[in-house]
Length: 213
Image 1 (cartoon, rainbow, N blue to C red):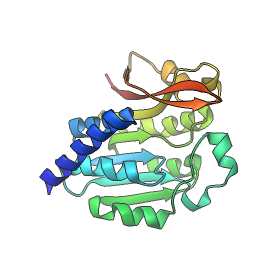
Image 2: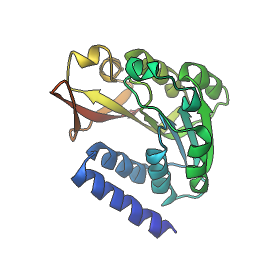
Image 3: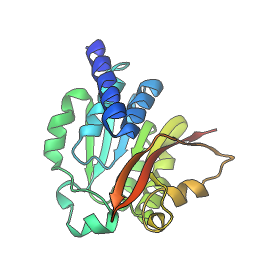
Image 4: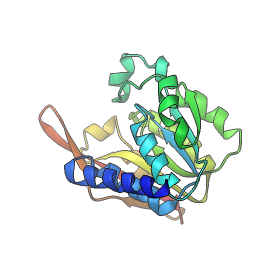
């Protein structure tokens, strides 16, 4: 089974790197590298990335603990514009997709409500992927709680580090990343980016890795 998972993950990495979404190939490679036994994802969306990360983690360990945060059924259309985000699937549907890959725990609602409750459990997480709401306010909120579940070897990956100054005044993790204490955290902005267009303007999207020094 582990060989099957490894083969599938390598296929995903190859597909993403050569046919689009290069940053997801990098994400899965980092999961393979870090061998996490617990994963926290903010912004589950369709569960596709969740499933791929779980498969990568399953190459090395069984019974991976997964904690996923999203609005699920509580998502409203007005959130699309406010957060520059996408409408997620229903919670039960996501659970059915992921249940055979680990111990799945999904949390429905805004993270400024769900994350404070989660950190009270005093869990420490090995690998964290932040790709939920894209507004600066939401990203700052997510980090304020996520950093409390890190241990000395935790890897945190931020999606949505953009190259457009005007766009980053409202969205993306740029301001947060640039404000982090470089004496405390090791910060790596991956150079290989994906791109999208807004009003014919090409904007790059990179992932960023954070860990304790």
